[in-house]
Length: 395
Image (cartoon, rainbow, N blue to C red):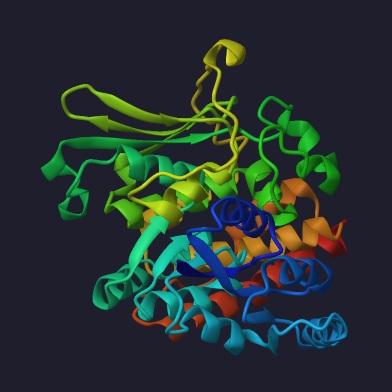
């Protein structure tokens, strides 16, 4: 019976993780759950899974949960604050940590799990995007087992040969093909982007995701962050990773070999597949995902991404080439811009403008330690907010 900690349990990845665990309750037990503010959903999870600990990053939400847990007569101990989130991630009794807290907020608890040598299921791409080499060095030093949860990176992992960690050239890998759905605006005229609403941007055609990630998918910043993440996860140069739009989201990514072979991982667009794969790896367990019917799918289409349409993807690729704190600053500026868009204080088409201006204004330094990364994150958020305010004044 493996003991599991789910960070970000009330989000879409957290819910899918708990669904897979519930289907395999003879193998896994939820020891701890952590989330931000959604104490109502957390209470339901506590009632179902009866963890030892439930953590709310927001102290007010924690107090509300504490009262509810007590009134229900449940034995779960309620903790609060970001330090408590990191504490349960590094708990000595934990075997597996699902790192699914969205955004930069997931960095420190994910690093805590890595440094404690856990089996880490990485759904928080920002942690790796921000810290890059520091993160991967921590994995090596601690002996942690890192398994990717993003459907694309999990697909690449499944298609990679044994020993790829020693260098892609040594195992005959020529390039990685990272697929993207293209989001809801794949064919929309670019001149309509100024009038895009948050509701439209969050209506992804294939995947059910949280609002922030849905907007990132609409701008293709999500793919840009995945591009950076793929470079770190698989030791690839930016020139070895190619993005291809695949609207059906059936092929989740591919690996191209020197001999002309191209291996692809396929499946219905359901995050329970990569979650179940990583949770049980190297074994296979039931996920609840329906079998793929290629006859029903009928066709698979592919096209190159238009960089005039998806400027955020180009900004992320440039940040991967630049290195240092560029990716951390890109991520921070994007988080500020997306939040402003969701609050209807920034136009959709201005999101890449804010990110670009932030990166052009601030100095990019080396990312020698976590404090340097966090400092770059803070500076980028301030500058991005200045850019957002400027666009608001000119509106």
